[in-house]
Image 1: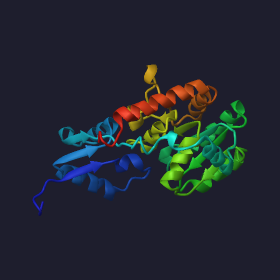
Image 2: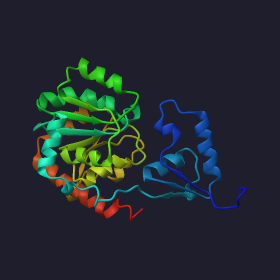
Image 3: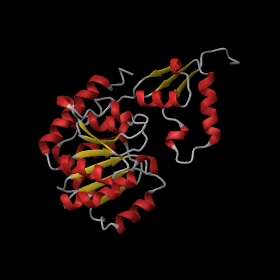
Image 4: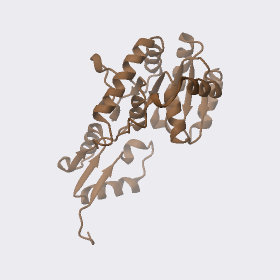
Amino acid sequence: ENLDIPFIFHFHSHEQGRMENPSQIITDIERTAAEKADAIITVSHAMKDALVKLGFQKEKIHIVHNGVDPDSFSSDLFTVDSISEFRSQTGVHDSPMILYVGRLTPVKGIENLIRAMPEIAREIPDVKLVVLGVGELENRLRSMTEELGLSDSIIFTCQHVSEQDLKMHYAACDCAVFPSKYEAFGIVCTEAMAMAKPVVAGVLGTSGFYEQVTIHGDEQNGFHVNPHSPEDIAKHLCILLKSPDMRKKFGLAGRKRVEKDFKWENA
């Protein structure tokens, strides 16, 4: 106001959605900023709907999806030998590999993914889940893994990695899973799609995954699941892991979707 210039406020997410115990101070700052802004940008139709339900002015809100660079996020950049070496170093070897990438925090649904693993391991005994991320749930997740007898099935990489290492994780996996209970957009899903990997995504409540993961027809690139249901997560991961042809088809469809709708040039 003092500078007399336009003010644009960008919502990636909102405090009530991303936090189990939202801060009233941050909530008030967000609301004041939204009221003062000349325009609001957010990252998905799902987030726009959530903001409107909170009382934000619908006419102000514009949607600009996040994006990825499909030339940079491409499985073609990795050789079969380099992927095989990475899988061996990680402890996956020739086993089917599920990849989770994200913060280790309740809203990401990671606990229910761990709870889904006993059923997946019964169906596919040599399966490996690689968990890539950091967060306050790390110790709890490790304890859950031991209590469930899954120490041989779950591999934790609880650290920040370089972008190149991140891409290698995508390239090496057979499918990726993001069982978020709330997700404004979910760039990890777009990255996995760009790497031609099939995805299983939580879509209950506010979820930008609806706008990324197609579940019908020739453009299907993954499955929607209830992030509160370990049984639903397990069921759809097993379907994918048991069908190499389906994984390939979904992966290629996801890659095409990114090239069409989720490039940074579009944004």
